[in-house]
Image (cartoon, rainbow, N blue to C red; front, side):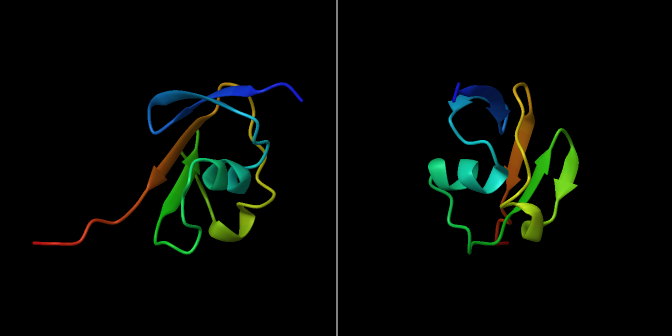
Amino acid sequence: MNPLDIHLNGQPVRTQATQLQALLLERGHDLNAAMACAINNCFVPRVQWPQQPLQAGDRVDVIAPITGG
């Protein structure tokens, strides 16, 4: 399979992942952590991460809450 060129949090990334969850695991994200994901500015519910396909040129944003005051 050919790698995909996407943008992850604004940075260019080349990945072998074809689904969002595989990308998150590949990049070292803890799937149990509090975070939200969007592809091309569209929110992707957590239950859809395993089957959410990625395409070349996608813009993926992974957002985690920040605590503190």
